[in-house]
Amino acid sequence: MNATPALFLAVALWAAPSGYATAAEYIPVYKASLLGGQYFLKGTNANVSANGSLNVAPVINFDDRWSLVGHYWFNYQGTKGVGDGVGAGTLWQQQMDHRISIAPIYSVADTNWKLKAPVSYRRNFTKETLDETWGHGLFDYDKLSIGFEAENLYNDPFSYRVGFDVYKVGFPNYSSLESTNQVDPAGNPLNRELTSRDVLDTWNFQLTLAGSRPFPYQDPVVSVHATYASLWQRYNDQRIVNRLGQYNANKPYGRQDFQQNLSVAVGYPRSFRLGSREFRLGSAFSFNAAYNGSNQNSYDAAKTLFINDAYSYYTLGGGPSFNLAWGDKKRPASVNLSFLYSHQLYVGRLAQNAAGQYQGSNQWQDRYTIGLGHSYPIAKSFSLVTKANLLWATSNQAHEKTYLYSYRTANYMMGFSYEY
Image (cartoon, rainbow, N blue to C red; front, side):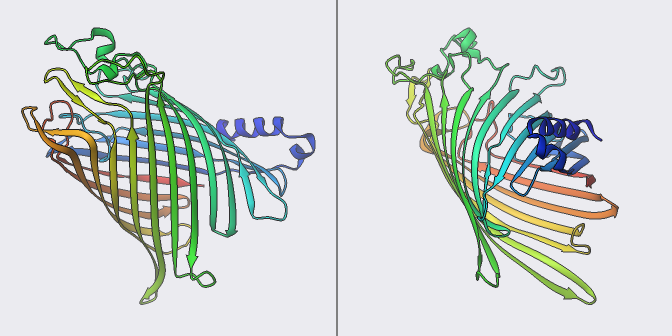
């Protein structure tokens, strides 16, 4: 038995009452993938590298009421994703993630309700240069989370649920330039919101409401899935910038963001035949609207310009996706295609020209993403997987000394996946 699920099983049986331990049913679930590929940015390509992942999710059923779901997730990314942030000229980056969680589940007698109380810990490692070592990346972070969820599976697989999560995100290695030097190389004072030590660390409180419904109810043709999430994010060590470019000592709290997110997806699955072969086509269209309201401002000391509401923004987006499958229903061959458009508009942040002069209009960015994938089973539990993604981003922000706003990037991946 693999060491990770064996550990989950040992902990679960130790914590369970004696009567449950002898009757427990253990169901192992494994999934792994190993892919090689390449990343392209503005016509320049990075070296061929690898991505790998491992998911172990053992389920332990104590009886018809109590169960326990453990989860270990490992992910290594040597080939950048097209949606990753792009620093000026950045081609190379490695990331490694470890996440472990455990969730007791209670099925309420004579109802469709299930109550869950997940606890998880995640550790992310990032290398942005070849000479960096694992564990010393500037943007390494850890995340500790605890939550509660109630779900009503009223018409399997359709349900509605409510959840509340509290989690802390910390960047143990991050130290801003201003927190140590206070001025830039030219002697100008830097943005005052970054003067403290732990400016990126956050406490987060999130409420989630979600549901799905078939239409028509008795003989479904389409399905609708909707999710609303409200997140309160506190940067306890990031001070508020005032109109003089100094932090506001009169405020008893630091930066606070309030994020509201609504997403809706409509799915339309159907089957058809071509000759003797049956195909299953899943079509979906998704829509997303989000708003982040922040009390933080910014100050450009070089131009003595106060920028009010610099971190508040709106995001709108959506697009179609298609998945065509054939063969065995549990292990089909498939082809998928997706397109996603998103528009982000900042409430107070101003656009600049290439020389850094402010233009008087609010900063915006449009992103167009195309994804194409193929999976083909080649042996028991093994599939050949290929993926390709393209992102085109355009913005009215032309000042790109440290970060790109208008660019094209792409990647491709090919390898194998395993499921058990």
